[in-house]
Image 1 (cartoon, one colour):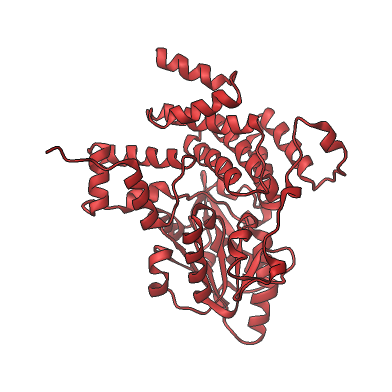
Image 2 (tube, rainbow, N blue to C red):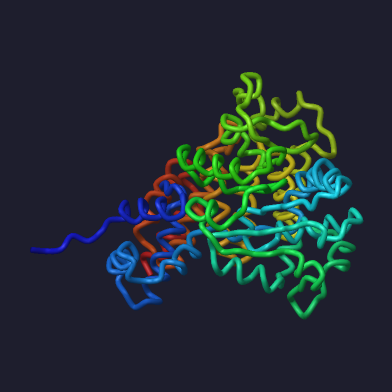
Length: 423
């Protein structure tokens, strides 16, 4: 009798059980790419690799590292971190209490190191604060412990900040030992290991851009874990696009200009409201823009500046402006991720471009306050299809090419891939 091989659905179910990540048609391509690379490296067929992975006959960590997001940058959530220092760290130190801080997930260490650096900028020695970074990816933790980064990770950091906290060697930047030694890193699965490996009583937990990858039951489980880890007066800081996930199980904290929550059930007035009024104006509808008062800090100005920088091939400037849109104007995050994907694919950073395109489409599906015009949606699908075509992954291309055809029948990627197939 012929043995039945596992399907992609079996693999996706295993991924959710192991990591909490909910695989959808939007974020499926990076998983397919990781499967292809890991199976090839193990000299196995993809089907046999899945069998061994699920049975535990092969080390799963390289695959998990490959499907999780590692990209971040320094000072990404500066507003939340500054608010945390002023509202939590400084008052605790005045009382003689050593604050405890958790960054979960910490990616490659950019967030906890940024926090240690900001402490120093506020006149606080990082040694006075317990700072721990955790992440499911072993490769990310190893990179974090080294404390060495490319200039790309410093794209939002001003020159004086870089000169104060980093030493430059050729094309890399290394964190000075005082900061590097102030942060402890642990590789762990938060969903299954946090209660056993972490001691409750954290005064601050930073968890940015993780909950958006979970379905609601997994998200609720993670929030309850964070609640158990928090001190009774502790605060959980999340990204602006994740507030709706948290607000049903925790109480919004009164911290100005920050997305912070504390233990306790939210009151009815704190429940998330329909945010359709936050939807950005359509680019192809000038009337909707003309009725809006535009300031230098408005998303419209940043949008236009980012597009001009991209068209002028000033890619570093464009990336910086797109990142600012994501952090400062969450309603524009989907559009900014799509724009960033265009910059990255033109720069030859295919995998990063694929991840940004996936974020654009995923965020558009999951959050009512985000809007992505058809042209940009087509670009995001086209970038995913293009990267998969380059990597030789044919199975995942069809669905994305169909979306491109539906949204923009004249998209140049359609002709490009047709020519590639003919050759």
